[in-house]
Image (cartoon, rainbow over all chains, first blue to last red; front, side, top):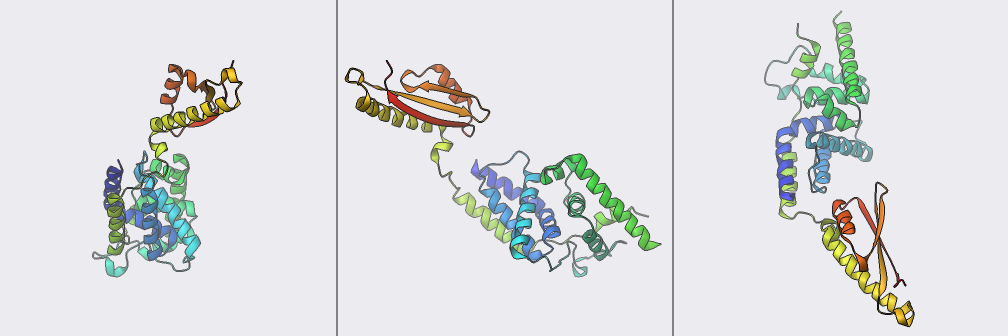
Length: 161
Length: 125
């Protein structure tokens, strides 16, 4: 049972390593602290010794808790690393919306809206899974997401006009 | 024009370092080698736990019964096992007169859901 669980966690990490890391990074705003949070989350999950019913949202929830713990203890929030790849890391031509614009916009959102957008757009979670991650109702997280996206639309329409 | 939501989704995100991969791999490998054990073995083996608790209780009950009961009743003691589910359901059974009903109750309860206490005393009547 324990070996199965470890193997399950290994598969989950290989499949969602970027998504988990980006989610942690959106909370900690520090690459090093985000990596520590992901590591700490896996360490804590391993102590459970058995797989929860919905492992993917459970892992994201653990990463969120670990990231919040990290920023409380380390106080590195003033250092602001972007959740987006730096320009040197982008091989193709950048899209119309730049990473720095999006980063600046995300910083203006509430924590709920920002986390929902990151989990939905960059971690690929469904509203149901985000709800499990956040201990909230699916309708609530869907409204956080829609509100955030609407703000994004308004923001960039204002910028372009 | 592409929707802003799609544009936002198309942005390339940062990648974790190889160092994190190495740390997680090390964590999982070490954990796989030596799986942690639950500190209380009885929690993992409820029947063993029950058996051990019953044995201790019987022994204690007999000793207690012999030491406190009137001479004519010193042949044994009474040991009552009280168990309470977190749902609030309660029951109790005399270990000297264990019935199938108690067995069934204990077997149907998951090991996390049950709390057990014992009381011992001289043999009744």
